[in-house]
Amino acid sequence: MATSTSRFVFSEWPPTLSEAQLEALTLYATTYALSHGLLYLPPVKPQPLIPNSAIHAPLSVFPSPFPLRLFLLARRLQSTYNILYARIATDVEFLDQVMGAVEGVGKVDDFVGQLWTGWKTLRDEGLVQPLQLGLFRSDYLLHAGLDGEPLSLKQVEFNTISSSFGTLSERIAALHRYLYATTSYYNVYPDMKSDDFPSNNTTAGLVEGLAAAHAAYNVKEAKILFVVQAGERNVFDQRLLEYELLEKHSIHVVRQTFDQLADSASVDSTTHALFISGDTEISTVYFRAGYTPTDYPTAAQYSTRFLLERSKAIKCPSIALQLAGGKKVQQVLSQPGVLERFLRDKVPAVQLDELRESWMGMWGLDEESAVQKARDMADRLVLKPQREGGGNNVYKEAIPAFLDSLPPLERQAWIAMELIVPPEGTGNYLVRAGSEGAQSAVKVDVVSELGIFGWALFGGPDQGVKEKEAGWLVRTKGKDSNEGGVATGFSVLDSLLLVND
Image (cartoon, rainbow, N blue to C red):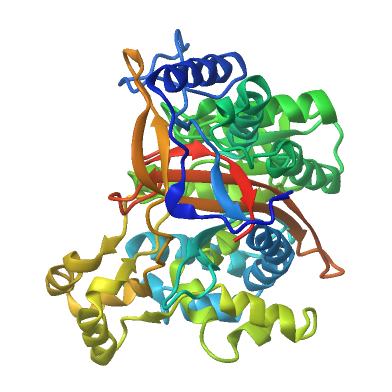
């Protein structure tokens, strides 16, 4: 990998293509995507019950350059993060203090408060399933720093619920390898080698985690429940996990929304087993919904979530693990001594230092002095609420007015984080498809975000954590876009070209 000895110049990427070369690569890319399941449902509302068409997912023509040493670092960190968040999710005192509705964020954030209050009630009743499954993704950007410092790896966030695009990331990586094998990218970048395209086996990695939870439940005829959103456009990313579970592990999947589950789900009063439609036992509940307030338009959806949590099915994630993924937890972890609370006995000090070095400066907005600091540094900051799914943050010059609009108490639901500064001048050719089909590739300056997947099964009597790294993805957006979600329309799917920096 990254066999060239010369230092890579990010501002010279991508290589120049002729119009004919770009047109040919775009045709190769889009037809490969359509042939290999790199798909989205078209942007139409309402989505038909039975899909009658599909479009290729938004994609890049070239892979994005990424330093080999930092890719290896991100992969190495994932095991530590798996253990860290498993331990946070089982530390009730910590979560009550940071995310609870009495002491923590939940007292000023209704969504967090609803989840925590339901979890507290269930704890008082007595949770019947100690095992928890996490399918995680840790997201990073390259940080250029100041005065010619080497590029560094900085964490954007850590995702504990509905970490998507694992299967499609595997397919976009294969697409870029195909373009290289077919065209050598017309030799516009002679230093490109096949070994510089890292392998991506994310589908098998994520499914291994789901299969491990299913095996731990130990009821052979049970099935895995996917809790999904109605009208989900990213359905193929989910279906590919379903197919892998069946083909490689002989595990069947049931897909239902919260509203469907309100009618179909029941919990046996004696065994606490979760059943769908009366006779289908569920081993594992995998949430691809439930991460945003819009998934809970009424109290009924919360009641259904708590019914699932009340059962002995293994949850991915449990409410505790979902709360552990809050931005406030990310910020509190950066405070002195907090990381040691969870990892001192498990991780060498050098690995703790590597974690800390991957974090930007963060602080809460609990005190007026912290709010004033955010005003003073606004052009270098992002404000983050306790939300997932993209489109929620406030950036730079918009921060002072936003702070003015927030009641003082509600500011405590937000954290301030120093902005990561990616390398200047890196570009790519981005291709999107709309309801009318493929659009032409557009060359823009971009920012690329690396996500590393992992899974952890934990909480059993031995208090051990069974965990693995599970693959990677890249999402690339135009540099002028602050937000970065593919599902929200800001980014395209991408992969890596490993380089020496």
